[in-house]
Image 1 (cartoon, one colour):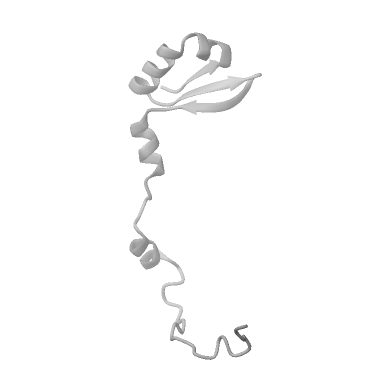
Image 2 (tube, rainbow, N blue to C red):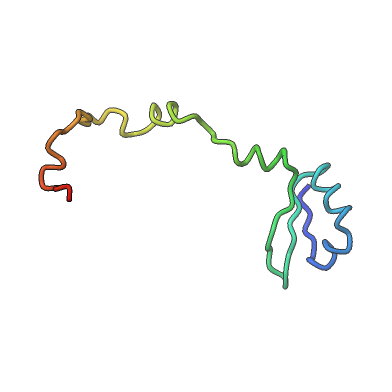
Length: 84
């Protein structure tokens, strides 16, 4: 269960806050009545940071997958460029 902690309570009861985050999930800390930060376990953090799909699956699911794009190598792209 997500619980909300006032900043002062979170500082005074930090060990309890960490135990709750590990046991019950993310905990919200407020500052001046506004939600400011979330304390969560490393396991939950890594789950959030992990990509939902790999890059190949992403492109396969793209709505642009049927668009024909010419990816051939161009030799004239540096025609106006001179080396000094």
